[in-house]
Amino acid sequence: MIFFTSVLLKEGSLANECYFILEGCIRSYFLKNGEEKTIEFYTEEDAVTPANYGKSTPSQYYLECIEDTVVNVGNPTREKEIYQKYPE
Image 1 (cartoon, helix red, strand yellow):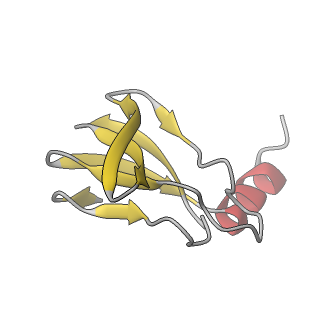
Image 2: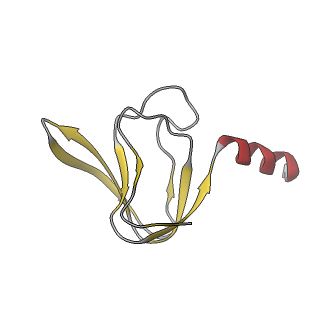
């Protein structure tokens, strides 16, 4: 899947997906007094799992592709299916 400078997660949203970056870069940031504060950058071969992934608590930060990015997208349902099929 390819995202072009997309916001993958917004502050206040639930994180129903996690990402493994094949190409590109994702930035994690939050807003303070209307100003963006970068927390971290994720690049090729990094896994990005939001702190609230699979939980019913809202995110405290944003995830944004800052360049053309290719990722493998996971979600709790897909992970459960894979673990059942390949328990080892």
